Image (spheres, helix red, strand yellow):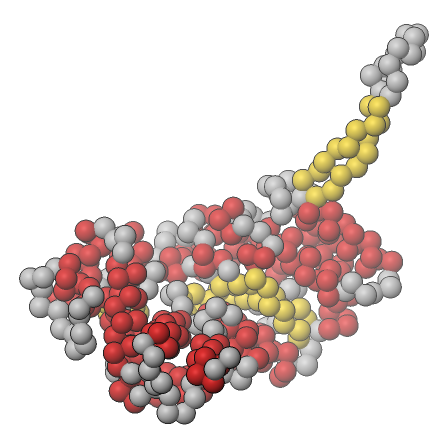
Length: 415
């Protein structure tokens, strides 16, 4: 293997964190945010109210998973009598098919795993029950066709059949839900005595589009788990902020937390933060200074886009047989990202984007407007002031789509 190939592999690997934030944390690539982060706020509130419920919202790629993982580490490091556990819900169930009761079943499985080495009979009994109710079970049943007939000859022998009982994770919750909650309650009491107050950090539900189902899951499962004394931090879809179910959610959740994009255009601290992310991962001198600034600006302050843009630009540099990452490599990556973000948009959605550029006014009300915000075509900033903007990578593509619009940009638009 050549030294150049080895070097570029190392650079590519350093920017894999967008795929697996846990790997980025373990590799020492995490850079603290310039101001008090969501993870700090949540961990401090959990310290004060361990059984409280939190809903963490934010756009795609804004860093919610990273903040959830940092929250876990802060709680477990700084709060002695609280134990936090991170859970990717998608590993247990199909998010698109989730229903009320599923999060409760997952919580039971996680606490069961935490207590799996216990020798206490009550713990073993409850773990077995939770496993059965969550995943379902099969039992042998004797069928006697002549049962109850005392005078008939035995023409048919009894037969044994295998009867399947579906679990909460494989079917809709039924009458077994109360048994599950009681089993978790008993198990949690033992777990709390050994580990401290249990707090579960549930990730993945930001991919759920059905707001009515999301509201039902939150109001049912968070209520049940909170009644047991289990704290919950739940990542949810951005659409929940703008849907009809918001009032219901506000009654079911103690705290709403929001992970916004970073305003790298107007906030010098955010610019330095993004610059630190790149310099922490990339080898010194590998990325030209102008290229670093262009990466930051065209990421729009979206963490995932910054990481992905940098990685695809590294690939461009390698394929071009260049030894450094230059402006021309960034421009190619930005063009690809812009086309990907505008691909599949309806004419009405393109008009909304153009109107924001013309009027500098945006208020998410319609389904189309909320979709553009939730999918990162429109970005929301809350510091130094609240504002909305079209993602910078889309700007040159918009000029091609709407050639009569005076859309300003300052990099090559030849696709």
